Length: 231
Image 1: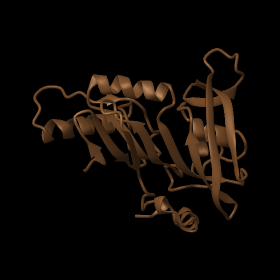
Image 2: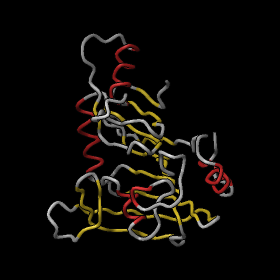
Image 3: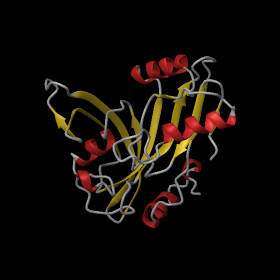
Image 4: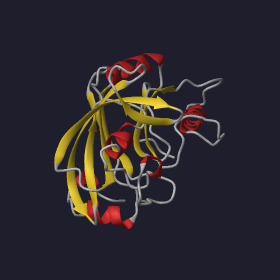
């Protein structure tokens, strides 16, 4: 278990699909507790270890995540998320052909574990916006790169599925194609933000995991970009 980056203020990791970000009612091992224990052992820290959760990835999603090692770092990262200074880029395989590029802007409402589009005036509805471009198409599926401008629960999944382009493997939101039987074809491949104390810009990238099905790997390999290098 090796972090992508670690200093006195930050911990950056690669999350595997299927891992919990934070403990839930399943009682399964979660990343927050796992990395707290890692820091405790590595630095021989007594008592409780602080590790701040400033964003999440859904359990069936993989990719880059950052944790805060101090409350000051947590507050400053949270402010960057709030003001959309943090850049989050994803790769997704969707059913259908959403077009070469575009933006999606909606108001989303979470209720009973599901998220749906709602009217802007609906109580509890939150604005959600992303932009995308299609990198490749094959077999009725499209590989898209997504710039996530807001970070709403299930945002990418709902915004694409509500337009008829569900993510491969996302049966909860209408997909007809399986991914690996339990996870989604969604990977957070890039995360950029300002260091909370030094203020320099940090960029972290994660290549597609080897576990991705052959179809996605075949499509991705046709793109020919360094950031899509497969492990």
